[in-house]
Length: 151
Ligand SMILES: Nc1ncnc2c1ncn2[C@@H]1O[C@H](COP(=O)(O)OP(=O)(O)OP(=O)(O)O)[C@@H](O)[C@H]1O
Ligand SMILES: [Mg+2]
Image 1 (cartoon, helix red, strand yellow):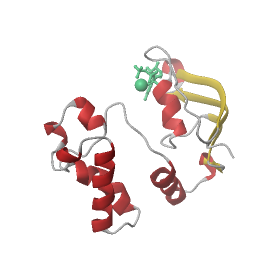
Image 2 (cartoon, rainbow, N blue to C red):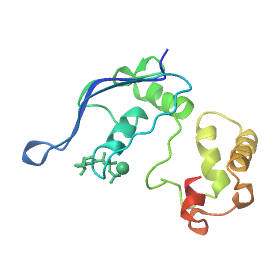
Image 3 (cartoon, rainbow, N blue to C red):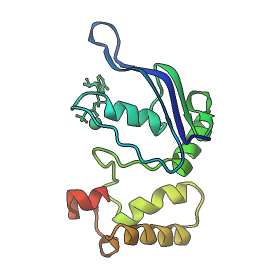
Image 4 (spheres, rainbow, N blue to C red):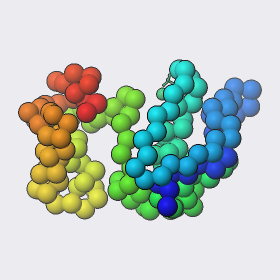
């Protein structure tokens, strides 16, 4: 089963005279283990595409299927579960919570998903270790460099 399928996806931002047709008929299939890079000039629709691929946005028309589940058919709770358990997403502008440390930012979605705080903290530290910033676990976002925040 593909991890991601887009079928004739269109996404229009806004309406009327100012409408922007950011995606016009995108079809693609990504299989498990595939590494795919999306390239294009600024404003060409990369973030629009990734927001759909991460179930953060819905297509204007067309189908987005993640691990066999059609995103538009999911109820809000099922959609939130899919995002928490199946999608990893590095935002262009990070979206870190400024009042939480690095470890707390990483642990938060695990706790929201039902993990016990201590287990979530352990997993968060292991994840920070994996990307080489375990020693920055207790720093807040504004005490880390851009690349350190992104990791
Ligand atoms: N919320 C919005 N309302 C109106 N237009 C939007 C909105 N978001 C994006 N757009 C427009 O949709 C098009 C695609 O934007 P998108 O953010 O997907 O581009 P991008 O490829 O990620 O660009 P960049 O490389 O600069 O991040 C652009 O023309 C942009 O101006
Ligand atoms: Mg972008």
